[in-house]
Image (cartoon, rainbow, N blue to C red; front, side, top):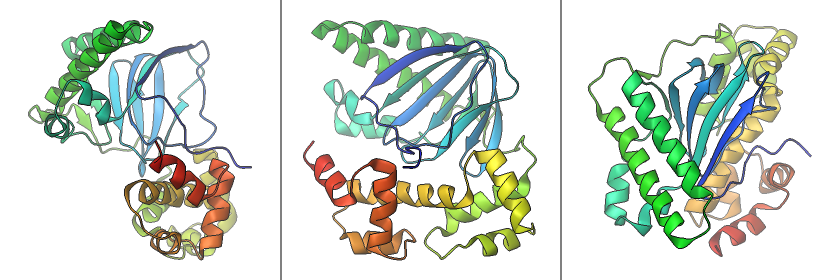
Length: 282
């Protein structure tokens, strides 16, 4: 079985982790929740969408649901970070659905370079969410949800602020532009038949060199990455629509329902139909 690309987490979940020598994720993954990550110490490369970015102490990055992403060391060094995974629905205990939708309206996958005051406010809120999450009483749960609301409001205020170069969506820091172009092509054309011969020619690289550099950057083969990206689209359609499996396979670039089912089972350990039933019954 391939490495699981979909990570199941509680809603909400918060964790503070430290790594004396840092760590590299085995492969890109995704969630069906928002991920909000605050780097407290160290430096990272963020492999996000079709670009790789540099993340430094004090930076915050947001990942939308169903977006493949991973982080890697710049050099072996101490790493400390806070991470929260959540669905907007967690705030329905204190807000109306209209208020929740308005609050998350500006949320998109991005990196935010915080100033000192913003970083301190974010850090204090992460810390409080972590503290309240360790309580099992009803008051602790309510306090956690209220603090998450404050955290999301803080992020929203930064996102809505005037443009002053805090939000970084450009300027790749890893120079393998050909590989990033290939990944961008996958994201825009995953419904098409994309072969290894085609994509290596598309980025003007020999097939052997393309395979080597692609794996060095992503820790996966091109075929694995392509299948995983398609599966993120399958997952979303299973959750958000009632489309037949054959139509989902057609819309996500798989050659057949059987092919889609086989890849989905490799990654999730169950068939798309069984997965959908489990989601609908929640």
